[in-house]
Figure 1 (cartoon, helix red, strand yellow):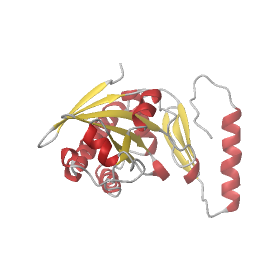
Figure 2: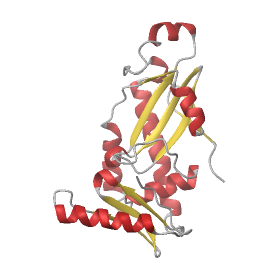
Figure 3: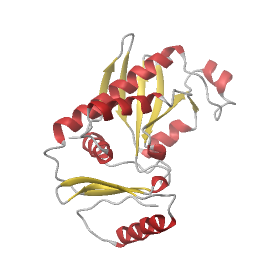
Figure 4: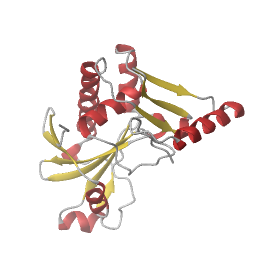
Length: 223
């Protein structure tokens, strides 16, 4: 059973996270403004996880996300990312969307505030592509606390499930020349040296081979 809703209790407020489909996300997107969250903070978190849980590797994250929320959406840059999960966040009377992806190999929280009131449309209606600093209702500290809890929940899921997992998949992160997944009883990741032309050519040969395969057991995401 996939998670349709999750509650996060922060120090000063509660957040309800709901999974949404691509059509709903696009509808909200029309009336949203991007939030300029701290992009370095998820890097700090994942570096901490690497130190505390060296057994966790790249494919574990997708394994957890798929186990919790189902298959990835298609609303992400499939050259710079290998997955994208989209959510609606309810914070008091405010609404936000979240596209959680792995932009350039970094876990990324793409947050947008949905304009809902007349005042918000009057103030920000012409600034829908301009990044705004976090609002008081979902402050920078709140966002960091939410990021910590969200990734912490994923890590907890990984720790519980990884030794019993048995569903094969393969994903491609083209930007990093990275192939990763779960096959023959093991999680694996293979990164090719993008400063080496021969290694880059080898990656694209392997990618072509994967794209040509037809197997119900493996899940491929390619450009």
